[in-house]
Length: 453
Image 1 (cartoon, rainbow, N blue to C red):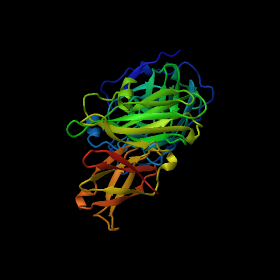
Image 2: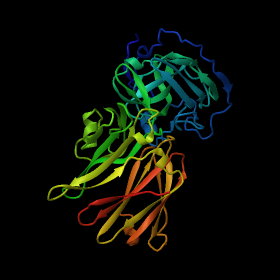
Image 3: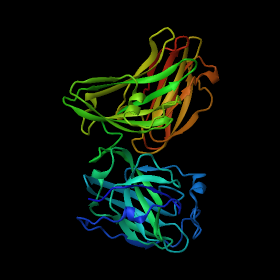
Image 4: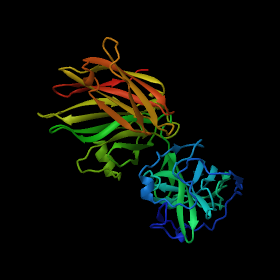
């Protein structure tokens, strides 16, 4: 069996790993890989940051203005990282157990002169989403496919690894992001040239791995779970309620996506038939299960996806949450809200009605990018007062996949005492969820305001 090792990858020649750590496996593929098509593109992409022939960009220089990471489930129409010199397009992968394969639409040399070193491709698993130009620490998930060297201004197209070995039985237990990685050999060292991250996350047990996809029919989005200290002695936490009505025992996955703080990751959970489970403090529970969510008193908040097994009927697994803070004389004040299926997301226009801002009530508005297509979306938010008049100019906001954002007392700047919000998606393909919270101005007791289409 191939001995599995964890390595760190860098973009330039600093802290490089030894190539022997990534030696090609002894096993031969069970199918013959398709040879890529070589094509000369003539010139490098105009305006490319990589247009100078032999320029080596240090990670710090790239990190000054990193390109937004694009996450792909299928072939993208553009480059994954705008600062790359040898770039990937159109990545796909499939695997089961310890075998699988991957394909790439194109591997493009954007340099203006010279020939690259030997290039190789592989699938890797990382515990955090990588940032182009920074060091990547990853576990090697697949054997290598080696297309060879590539002249400047040229590309390999229609790359297909065929069936190759995957090392899923050797990867340590944990939750990971899956990336396809391109590397270039320079002497005895290998440095990465580009990567593409996939929408699916991977959950490994120590002897096997499986993918978890956000956006299946039964997936439930709990828009926000948190651990946040507010004004005075307030300390807001979220309890999670799960109910299994599937007719059998199921393993669900809790997929936490941090928007405030850090610690995104996956946690598996098994529930018996008919069981209802109430987790009093879900952020604390995720910490206990190994997610690296800080417990230093800093604000921690994010969306939580509850992912039942594939094929689960949406109505047979139910999730909900209550966010609350202890009351000054005992008890607590809070608001309960349901987990939402993808069918309850909007892709065009939604409304949140019932907002108030007066001596007795105040309101907040929140939006979440569901992330089902793995892309950023832009929303335009317009506030309308109780008489039907628009309150100021619309607010535009861009949300990364799975990002949550809250606007506190949005009616206050205009002086309106009541109104509603119109939320329109102006760019992007993923759906979104919006909701409001109506809070008592004295007790902070809250009510959930769902969105309408």
